[in-house]
Image (cartoon, rainbow, N blue to C red; front, side, top):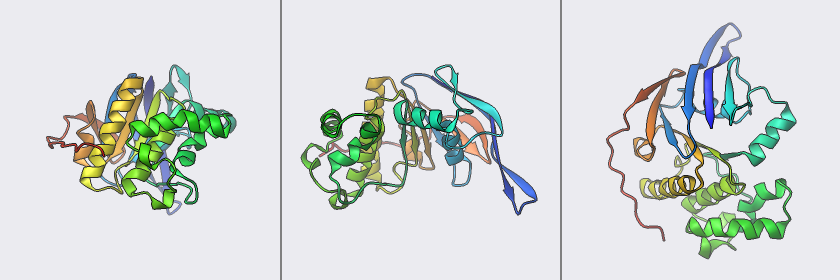
Length: 236
């Protein structure tokens, strides 16, 4: 499904020195597998996700998705890959305040060519699975942080992607809400056999993954999952 081959990305400092944000990272992610990249802020997690999403290009190495190298796609092809083949859940909750939960979740489907009615009909069952059935017609600015994150997950999964990237998706949530959101994400992606690459600095979040790797100073190493108990309250 996903293969990163000796991936490197460097950024200049003061126009003289360079820092290796991602330093010869290689990994393989199988369909339905949930991998957490665990590390502190500044370790290169977000850069690695941006490379995998074909938003930025590597200085060295390759990103292979379903046997196709996407790291050198032309801008239009890269946009198509992100729209139809990739689900990207970010920490920033970029919802349209005046639109309801259903319309916010349907935005990606509109970009894929569905009509507004078709998009709303397709995404409604997904929001219901995420515990948002009673909030479909509520405006985004009236939703709690946890509810907004569920809308973002529904948007990311609306096109049935086989690869899902999640960049600190519980960073704005309390521990209980974060656990609920991650449990739902893991369940939905397992059902769809979608591979998940999660970037997090939260040991509890990493505990939801099938396996955990540590990213520090741009270098990825395998490590056992953190021995943190995960208690998920029932969704309301």
